[in-house]
Length: 149
Image (cartoon, rainbow, N blue to C red):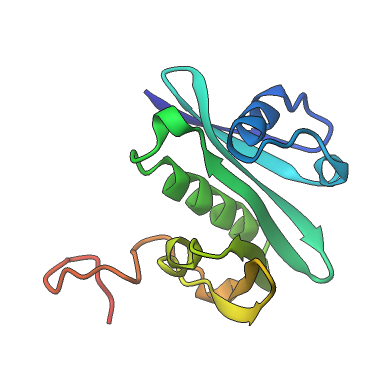
């Protein structure tokens, strides 16, 4: 069974940090005190996670990752959608993230677009009013009933 769970500021972050350690080899950091974390569980095991925080007039997404044994099951997509949904709930004017090179296509499927490029990552953003969780913008199916052209 797949379940999602939110961890607000001040919560025990053992599960989100366990996924972060597994995927990014990093533990707790200064952002954790002001971020909301989400974890997706597969059969009760923390499988994927990400976080959302407010910075410089925009919501930021970060540390979106799926532990190796659980990859290929669309759990990363679910985490991204949960984070964007939470930003929508807070009437986000815009949502930004720093995508490591090579991962931009994953985020572009839900409408995030390149703003600038750094040495190892791409700054991406989507205006809040353009967040669309009902469909995948990169869907190649011409006859998909959910596709909006």
